[in-house]
Image 1 (tube, helix red, strand yellow):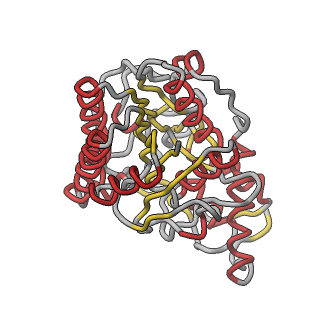
Image 2: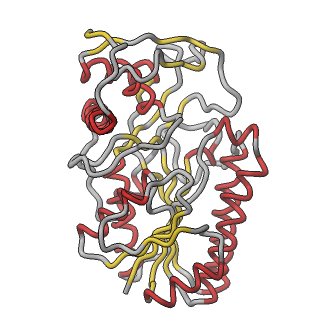
Length: 337
């Protein structure tokens, strides 16, 4: 039996596929390659280039490859972009999930893992934030994911499907073996931008908001290494396969680092300095977001391996330097610290 990974050529998806293949699973990928790369899909794993919302494509893949579980990672993820293009986000995230679920129901899929986000909480009243906290998104991105969660719950109740909703906090880092990482042009992830600045690819890094009521005035985030995140998906799949109940789980480490602390970690592991430019707050940004991970740790057979900001930064930097070597050399603008 086979696991279908939508978005399996993207950043998180490619790590997910590698983790499944490393565990001996049969995997098939659907990805439209809008932000993914076919080269990131391991040799021998079938890749169907198309949209996860194309029901005919999905049904055909499920039938042809005897798919028994779906891990849905395809979607748009940039908060500021969602503020500018809300309809695009409702199309790519919510409507695509609706179509994928419809195909899954028609083909009898009864295990579904959904990639959600801590953005569904908005600015939480309680930190660390538990899964039972009120959901009050501040952006179309957060709403598009919350709507998809609600649909999944309703579909599961109606059709006997078991599911896991995994609410990601801040995903970062790269495969420790250097096989895959974040390579999307123009990616807005903080650590990605910081390692690009450290390697001289961009002249500076922007910090949006330094007047928040936090210790250093910048936003606080709970970073989780991408390799630990995909192992949480594997653990969730094992939970469902063993007859476990559906669950909504936070995916983080339960500790927060400020934007400025994160930048200093990249300076520290790279040994390079780079300019920081301070800018006003952005609409839709959340001040402090740290996960209460007690439910995930209790329910899943999961132990993080990379719960260290310097390690996460070092893996991100090593991947970035590999990309640069492949493109013809490191940038010259960053100076040694």
